[in-house]
Image (cartoon, rainbow, N blue to C red; front, top):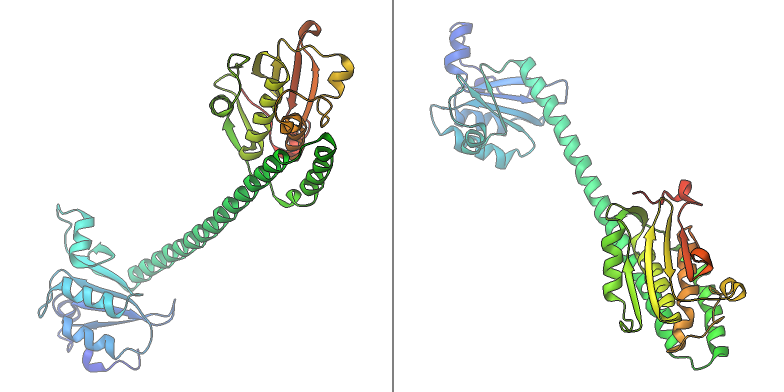
Length: 351
């Protein structure tokens, strides 16, 4: 280091061994990466003066556990305040029983070594510190990006919830089938134009507890309709939780308001089946089951949109919802097929 004054380097040469062991208390590596130069000082005060006169970036400061003029901990603490980017190294003669964490905390050091600090060893420490700093910066960047993505996801979920409330509240304000039909057309256009920009966030979820939660929150006449969850506790599906939850809720409510009886749910590898055991429909009525207002159940007109909306939400996730007769042509089964686009959406149901 050309700028450093020779007076602050090693004490006069009394022999290489004695100078290295007894008079060199502090070592400093400064300069550009890969071109660091080492300078030594015999005391803490001398080292601070040496550091003050150094014009190149200070990269490493090392000292032993004892200094002739000040506490080693106080010296390294001062160095941390003045040169926060420099690596502070504590040099030990022997490793005692004291833990590394308490030792470093006590002396305000970042790492320690046993034995003398050679230039090669100092360069290795600096290389390791640079790699660690790079990893920390990358982790910080990733955490920042993750926080922003999570905030964006939360915003989109809120927007989707507003859309569902918009559909439900709007349906309650109409008083005739003609108004309801016009309302349905506007909802479909909105879903195709606006909601299509809301990406789905698929994740693997357990179906049984989610369906239990939906059933518990579903307001149906318990004396008129009973809903049974027959989905295995091991069944999982990779779906968008918000859209999938609302799709299942609307499908259950649509079946429950169709006729009194029992509605049960079952899952196979690629399908989720809603089965109404006591509701019998003709083939023509069955084909029109998912069309808006093909049937008008007793109660609010909005219930005439439950099954059509369930189909829209299924299609939004790349699924297919269709009706079919129950076993032995008794009852109505709604089949939510997850397999057709499972290769693209990754939504296949697994047991």
